[in-house]
Length: 376
Image (cartoon, rainbow, N blue to C red; front, top):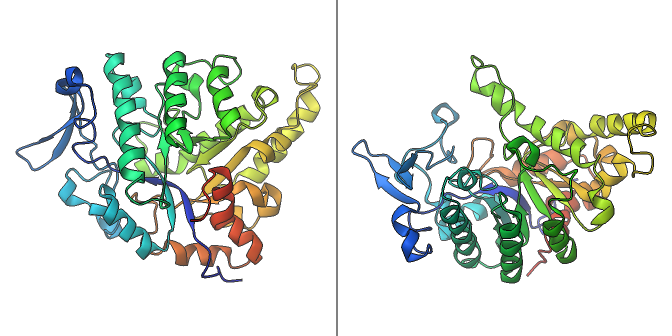
């Protein structure tokens, strides 16, 4: 069946390029000189400088609107990308062209979950940058067009006390999700199998606010040094596979039954096999591994984990094996995997074999329910 005209598509993974004044407008006065600022080079490039260190990825693959033959890893100047990448009014216009009603946007300079800030030596400056980004996202980017941008926030996850404090603050400001690393242990932090994150998870559990874990936020895939970059791009989704299996073999959901995770940009085609394999190993090996009284992994998945896809024919032909309530759409604007300005058309084609009620859930309803984002 065709995707009905009254369906308001909600994309749960897009990206925003921070404009040059995001941090300088919001950092404490004593930190502004060392905080993120844009420098224009003689070669015409725009480069972020943080505490004297250049971070040249200003565009982060913001290639929407360009022919595929002109795709690159990133534009090097704001003038080389669409204004919709960094200006809310232009973003809404590009969403309207694309047929997208609402978006949830991940950051660019900070990294998907704030890894740029985590790696900064000065953790006072790093935490202030997290706060500045969150205030800009909620108060300017999302407030600029109410109902069209879902507020996402970062946390200073290298410090659990600061993480709790910032979570309390952004939840009070209306944040609908926290961007978090998909595999904290891969970054040298305590794993999901510890109680380290319990104070953080307790807040989200009480507020019914999910975590969004974008692939790559737990590090890159293990790619051969001489492999083309197409290899890495295709492999990044494996991070979501690893994170899912890890989460579905934890005991955190016994302590936090309302906690939920969205696997941003990880795809869904792999899920039927992963669910089958997790349950198979659980049935055979739970008696001697300390998991005898643990919940079945596939049950954990269907209650707590949500898959997100851009284009995924394998997954959409197996929605019954994944769960129609666990699948959401993502547009990935303005990155090279996006289908702008044809997202609605391509999604409708991908969903054409599914019943109308399933199409509505995947395109809109599941996201509105998970992120508590009602129609206005």
